[in-house]
Image: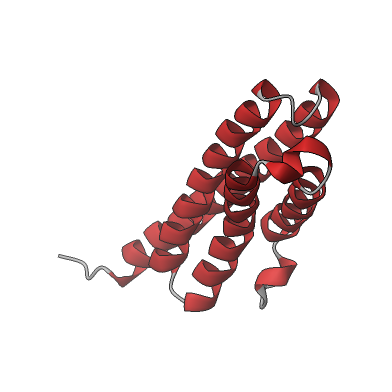
Length: 133
């Protein structure tokens, strides 16, 4: 299995980037573009997902990467919540809502899987560094 050397290689980051792009397009058109608070908050939390994946990866330690993946997963939840508000305010239609929810749910699953893998690496590293007693 090849080693990932750059965060841009992570599928979770790639999908988070696509989600952020799609959110920006949806939030920049029609009545949504005039709801500045919700538009900006959703745009920021979508960008936060990919930013936290990248920042955690670049920090170089599994512990910090795991922590930043937890934050990224939380931002996925925040984005889902804001999408409900956008739907309820009729800023997006049902099809847009379903599409964006599918994207963010996929990102959330990928981040969760990556977080689990990083935790398993941390556990293996800890077990291999323990001295026998």
